[in-house]
Image (cartoon, rainbow, N blue to C red):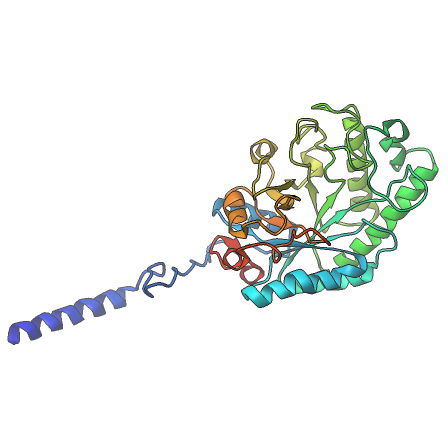
Length: 364
């Protein structure tokens, strides 16, 4: 009995000594509970500065984590789609996506005030905001339209005619009038302290937007004109409108046999902060990562979702596996009638949103 008692006292002594030395915070002491994340107190990153966001993106890639994102439409439908795809997702997963996507074009007479109200609220709740711009076609009269085959209609498209320094024309007036409206909406976000991941003239290496390629080749002939248009927009918004709250994002479409290369129309490192890719397919993937990495910029998956053969069938957990260690975030597009594209409309989203490798708004 004395031997047993002595042994028990010795065990208690060792346990107390270990506790006094401090337990490893990564030790899984809860049986089935996952290990707690280590808080990085050595390097505080301010996510309310442009440099801070870019540094944070690089850090998450290095740590093989990826921020979650959901696009929620444009104009009057943004508040409703935010409720449908972000608020409702949080009800099922108890988490909010980190990145909220919107569009300042896509259709005429956008209600920028309604959009900005949603974007500001998400930002104030510690989220991040990205905005694309489906700009109206200034070379075609009539109804608002951003879709126009740029190869078939190349004879009617002159991107350099839209520059600030170009002679006056109806196309220039139309384009720069819309630019002014968009810039003022962005100024309102700046006044509210919002930094915007800004994604204009995306999918330029394809042929379905008026700012796209003029020939099916690796380097299209109008690449210099596209670059001039991008740089002119950058200068106009930065200098004329004082929009230093924009993180400029270059976003080509995933490669196909007929597209230009991902970097053929790259405006140059001075005019770009982030690079990314738009990809839709049968399952989550990031096919352009290797090519984009050569541009030496932080990388994101700007726009993604299932194609028409996989609507509602994506495994959301698989998108984390496809992007972690490569992209800082992925932005999944919203659904529309007959097309289940959003996170909530696909499969296994609860596991994705609660994954230790997926960064939600609560962790920012």
